[in-house]
Every structure is written in structure tokens, then in C-alpha cells.
Length: 196
Image 1 (cartoon, rainbow, N blue to C red):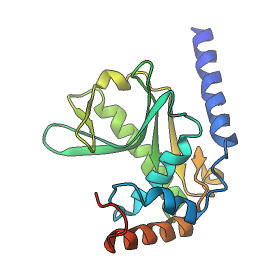
Image 2 (image 1 turned 90 degrees about the horizontal axis):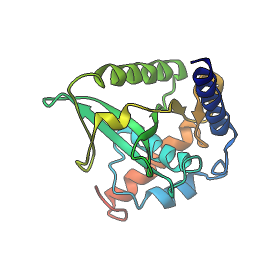
Image 3 (image 1 turned 45 degrees about the vertical axis):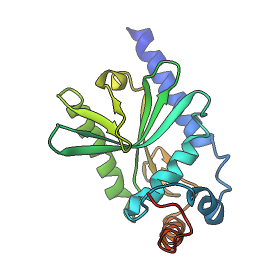
Image 4 (image 1 turned 90 degrees about the vertical axis):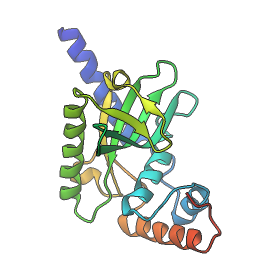
């Protein structure tokens, strides 16, 4: 039992240090992300969506697409109403098991954002033991069993969040993310970018 706990703790520490040390996409700016995200058929009207889409791109450096599927916006419901949503879910292609779940919060208040992210994680874990339906925005369903052995839950914020308790921070700050969102909304409104 002690070996299992030490092994689990070591893996968690290793992953945390990987998240903090990996910065290959840190040099990407608003223009580069605009060029990438403008092709996404996503509604950027919800303020958090731009942060989630940037997070997906930056998490790809830790979980390469050869081995993992990274899915944005998996919701869970009780067959009547949506209970919550998981912002970023990483699935191991070999085992078809969820490897990691990230809550992404880009708010002006880091404290409020971190508190909300932790509440959302607890809500999901509570409902995972109940009768729920888990599906992505395209209607693909996932079993609760796929979520039983999650290796890592982590929180992601805009730049500056790691000093405020977040596990990972994006390369863009809040102002840059809102500028990016504005440009994407304008592009879609003018018909130059794909619509959802």
C-alpha cells in the first residue's frame, strides 16, 4: 500500500513539474492563435471558450496527439438537464481511459476562478457515482468507467495564474485572450471564419 501511495505521489509530482516546465507554445501570441483558432467551428461568444480552445492547444504539448485525444467541452447530465461541463478531457488512445481532466478559468479574479474550478471538480466527482450521461458537443457518449481512473485533475488560467495557485497557466494574459476573442468574433460576424 505504501509503495502504491509513493508511486502515485511521484507520478503526480512528475506530471505537475512537466506542466510547469513545458513552455514550447509560450512564444505564441495573439496573431498566431488567431490564425489557428479562426479555422475552428466554435462559438466564441461565451467568454471562456477562447481560453478553453487555447488551453487545448497548449495541453497538446504535454499530451501528444499520437497517444491522446484532447476533447473540449464534455458535458454530463441526469437525463433531464445539464449538470456540468468538463473543459478539457485527455483520453489515452491505447486504453480508452481518461488520463486527465482540466478546468479552465480565465477570470479577472484568480481567487474566484480557482475556487470555481475546484467546486466544478468536486461536483463532477460527486455525480460520477450517480446515474449520468456523459457526452461531447457532437453527441458522442462516454462511459462512466472511462473516468474511474483519472490520473490528474488540474486547473488552468491565463498567464500569471500559477503564482495564484493554478497548476498551469496559458501563454496569453487576460487582456490578450479578450483581444483574441474579439478578433475571432469579428471574423465570424463578417463571414471570414467558419461558423459553428
